[in-house]
Length: 249
Image (cartoon, rainbow, N blue to C red; front, side, top):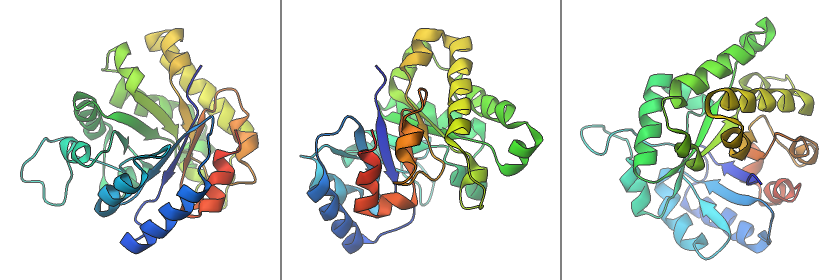
């Protein structure tokens, strides 16, 4: 059975004091859940978050990393640095990294390789923009992003990869993706994996949905057969909302 996962991506939000307050609220609400629960604070707060949550069922993960082991990359963070503060999972390929920081499929392939070489689990993000969806090119775009960044890997690597589909067109645009649209794309993603690696691999990989999951739509989205959880943005910054989503399973 595929692992159900709810991961909160805090993005560039919360200083140390705000992080401690939110984590305290999360600790007060965490209960035994069918889903793995993860949060991704900013780099500056990873160590504090890990120390506070290491004896709980909430995993602290990172929002990004560089592909190099070390060197003249001012402002960047390596896989070994993440591991040194207790991080075991990293988000790669988020739509904001692609759009604002120019991360290409080729760069992301190198990041994935570096993460896996350092025994980090990867939450790999991808998804189409509104123009792709309206033109009917959305499946081709998603297929290309997955193939270019991941299909050089051996099948065994997918034991350490979680996929996260982000319909960029449905995040903060006023457009809405239906649960049925989410399911259709997740089924297509699984079929794409199956065509390359076989049904066993495809059916074992968790695929998360990252399109504005909220407490009022989580249960319906998570109820779809190929949706294994969510990568949560804004709702992850509120403990009540986040655990309402976690408890939607």
